[in-house]
Length: 301
Image (cartoon, rainbow, N blue to C red; front, side):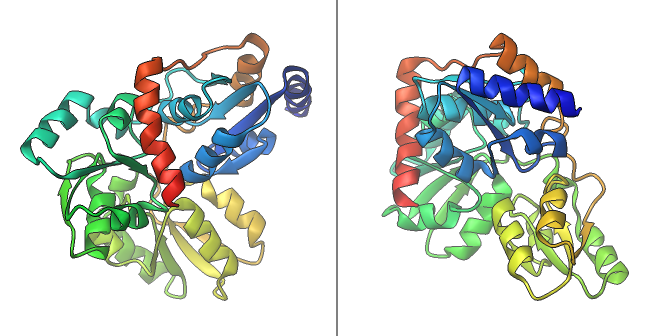
């Protein structure tokens, strides 16, 4: 493994490439990345990254976003079939019909969406800035796609807004139920429960803290508490343990493992760099329309 890591580092220098990895990636992949973070952080990096090549260790919508924000760079997705079930739960045609049923509503799309859906939206958001983005809009009625759970979280934070939800969800975060929270509290009564807003509203209501992946990490890093029950994808545990070696971290549900995020291996990162494998392309006109939603998000936040 060390030899492969060294070869990847050498290839990055030879090809003037950077590797971006989402927090949910395997530990070994995070270790060879130049930047590790959540969707919002990595979007900002992609928009301003130096170099000629971006290897995006994540899922397809993330690599698409990087290509939209950095159209002159080659963007590679190490595992071509690493997708996002939530992003696949809505199409551009679905959104056009929803817009027709709610004329005058602003459209906010979660970054977990494909380029065609972004192109039909007014502004994009991530879990870390969704409330701020929706609050900034003058429209009272807002269509929020595709995650109904994040949309519900936003609606509760902004009661003056009328949020129209699409019934999409994260299949990983949706596994967590209130009974899991109750069981975790009984097992670790001293621990704080930190949950992602992609979890069901019934779970979110029981958590001690609700936030994006990066916000959960920041909370645990700065907290005076020492024990935490983590209600998001297992990939953050390695980060948390490194930041807080004195802390105790428990996973809220054993099923908090995203199979698509776990597809990427060191070998696939190496193959992508060595062979320019699995290049992401986005139609220019579509990319231009989709970029407007991303640029607006970056301006707002």
